[in-house]
Structures are given as C-alpha cells and as structure tokens.
Image (cartoon, rainbow, N blue to C red; front, side, top):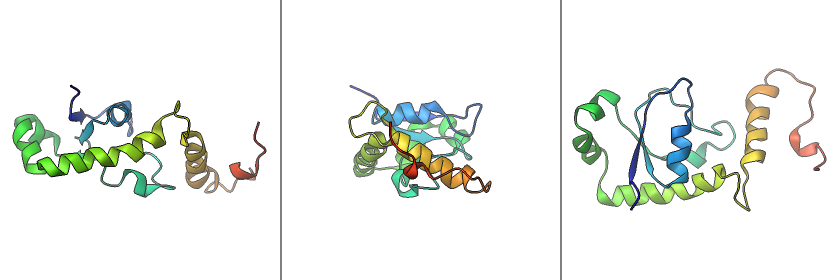
Amino acid sequence: AGARFCAIAAGDTPSTSRLYDAIACLCIPIILVDNLELPFLATSPWLFNGVGLRIQADEFLAAPAKSLLKATSRQDWRRLQRQLIPARRALMYRSFSSSVAARSLSEAWATCLRDNQTHARHFTTVAKC
C-alpha cells in the first residue's frame, strides 16, 4: 500500500520536485513551506486550488499525527486525493492527453514574455512540427 500523505519540505528553490512526485503518486502533499510556488498559477490557478494541506513546519515536526488529525478528517483526505487526479494529468509528460508542454508555454507567455514587451509571437500562432 502506498502512502496517503507526503511531506513537502523546503528545498533550494521556491518550487520543489517533491510536490510533483507526491502528485504523481496520488499522495496528498503536506506542504510545510510558506513560499512554495505551485505550477501554472498565472494561467490555471484552479488546477491546484485545494491540492494538499498547508501545515506549519514546526507544528508538524512536533506532533505529525496530531497536526494531520487537526487539519483533516477521513472524508477530507478522500476528497483531497480525488482532487489530485486532474493535477496529476496536467503534470504527466508521458500521458497520451498530456497538456504540460502547452501549459508551460502558456505560463511562460503569461508571466515572462508578455511582461517584457517581447516581439515573440504567442505560441498558439507558431506552426506545429
């Protein structure tokens, strides 16, 4: 049996592969980082809304089981696990219906390229290979 909850600790960057690994395994992320950057916030904020639980790291480290019980009930963790399914599909590169490349390009356009007054064309206007 797999884990139901996966702790997401701070890393070297505002984003961490631990989050993606947890979602890929349908393991509910326990986010112990205040400034964790979720993917695709500019273009698809709804996709990761409510994914995981945010718990203060010191509270979790002092009493992991107690902090989890305080944060969720049995019905909640089932709901949280179901919410991981669309997020998992959005992040899977090798899935037949993967949209991760298009989402990544949209996110880059929305957050970097557009703001820098670039003359680059929007990715949807470029011919596909």
